[in-house]
Length: 262
Ligand SMILES: [Ca+2]
Image (cartoon, rainbow, N blue to C red; front, side):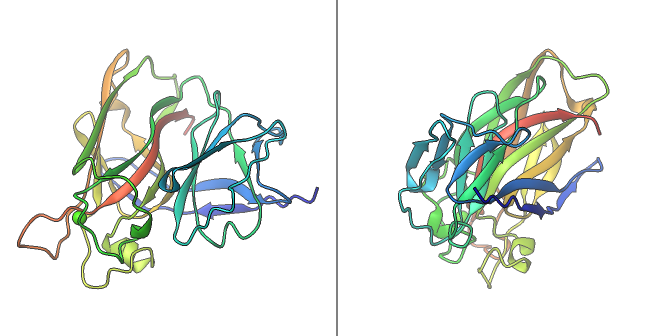
């Protein structure tokens, strides 16, 4: 099998409020002779993994050779594809017509003992009032749950000598000034303030761009070990609409915490 594993580096800019943070991540995916999920470390096929296109309502599983097919699903605008398998970090990647023009090979990574999955579902924040030109608007599938998302989860302990990062697997639909400047949003006449990310009530980042695997460093001073902790994400607002509040509609998927050496 001819397998080209491309390393695509996405650089994301998240404005840290009081930490140095971020940014970058290596997405291990590439092209092969057929769609396949492999273990990023061993290169072995991963069978029985769930592969989902939430916006298309499509779900399938990989076979024993890690192969899957997308049933000729037509992707006309960027959409999120997720791969979920027990024992692995949640994985999602934003795909478009171009990335699916050839079979795609996805490398997923085993989870570490201190990783914490906060939520693997896809959420739509905002008010369901958005332009056709919004970044990826044609793929909004779900009804907005409102202008914010919040979730409590337990942190057992902090691994000594490690830092904690909040990972947002995929984000689509943000119409910030930066998203517009990057060509993600085609809304010309307006833009929104960034979405905001809070940890235990303190703001830890502004979310300004769409993309995968955005990493936000969590200040350890905010972490409450052996207790409940809380992540909140608030939608930004259309800065050009004064008559009423128009929240920036966007979708995100796969929220988890990774613990790693700095
Ligand atoms: Ca809106």
